[in-house]
Image 1 (cartoon, rainbow, N blue to C red):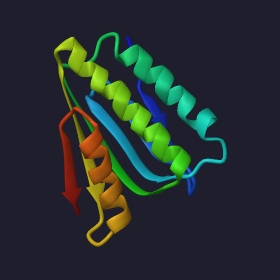
Image 2 (tube, helix red, strand yellow):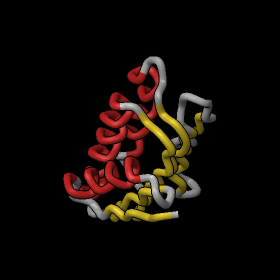
Image 3 (cartoon, helix red, strand yellow):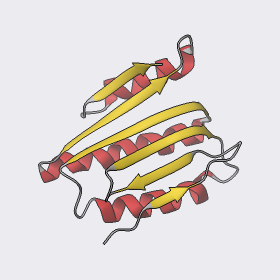
Length: 125
């Protein structure tokens, strides 16, 4: 059985929760790690295993306050990996949260929405 991946957030790294058993998938906080590849490596490893037997319905919640360009690329790659869930005939969606008035996060969400082939919900909070 796939174990839960939980990475505590810091000032510079996002809180990550990928929990298949409880159907919780969340990226939250800031993402500007010093070594982006190293930070995201266990996340991609987990996703690789998850894709072998995904839940029938997966909703990834992204509630980011700030992220740098290298994190933006990694987040996009996570979304691309989650698109593969559709190939299994399962449902997947992304909920992108942004603070009212935070044009940068909202615009990045709109950009992702236009280039992805999965349901992508922009949610103002």
